[in-house]
Length: 367
Length: 132
Image (cartoon, rainbow over all chains, first blue to last red; front, side, top):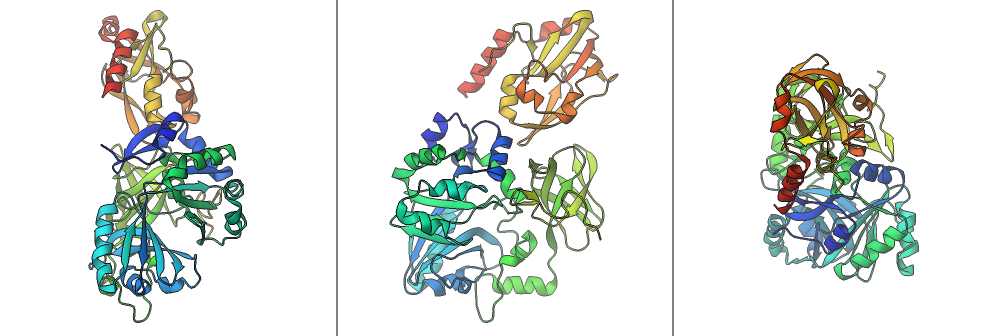
């Protein structure tokens, strides 16, 4: 039996098409996935992301522990409420998961990790936390709703309790406010402004309806996938896993090789950098008709690679993808679609930000 | 579920066939199929003049989610293709049994139509699929 979120019956009542998503019964769309995508780019949409795993870490040693656990440096988190995106690596530098870490109090941090990796993540975190005497609390009773889009914050704020309304609207990107069990973060996975709101599961269905009444459109995981890929954001399991390092997954920007910090995987990453990172992740745009898809073979001047995340971009009206290919200048690149080599353009993601195609995505940059 | 027009015949793989004057068979995908695929974004059409065999792939429809081969329900020669789909593939989502037709074949063997499912048999097939 697949797992369900507390909003499962709400999705079904809305007529959602449900699919198995990493062991969870989740809505892929409520109607047209493309219309849901455009709703987020142009107005406001919301996603049930209650399958995500919330892990609270408490203890005097929690910051020291996270300096050891994460490839990005929690030393960047100076003010309570600030958030950071990071990979959690194994000793070989392979990505166990990607996550967001929130600094809440000196002795209290929160992690939000992926659903499909929950069990191995919790095991890894607990195992590594014990020498630091950090308590690891998993919170499956919490629900999470992401509201995203240019109008998402103002629409959502209208249904937040008064105590959080002003503070939520005043949040800077990548920071959070909380009041009791309600937690509002200005984060997301779509390339648009918005909130990710964590609340007790028992309150989620009523809150969802209030958000809908405020004019926020329910959107499924189908739109979430096209939005995040346009935004140039990786999906764990498809774009990286424990057989890839962050350097091979376009995530070098999330690795902090700061002086004297001995995080798990650091020596492997440094060795890889010394010897030369063998593979790289690139962005692709298909100007011809068709759709780039996971698993398609990519031909470059330096050898073959494969499409990781690939889809049709509703904003661009073209196929877009991430691909992993040999390191170096790939030269002219083509993708095999149904036995035919189709030329593609190599671009630097993101493809879309804040509703607009990024420079060089629709047409080559003038050089 | 939308009404299945009574003048259609079906393949198990969800293509419909409508026999018109002069032994021409118009072909599309069922409303059920377009719903399963979701928003269509690209259709690869056969060329007029192509010779097609019943049960062989001769077109491709791609949605955001997946690519799907379209099999010809009958053997013959392609006499018409729905050019509208090149720019508006979503026409299939909007009107699968009408404006969203994909190609038309001049049948080589009229008996091909007899091998196809009638609307009741197709509706039964969908019910069985739903039960799984």
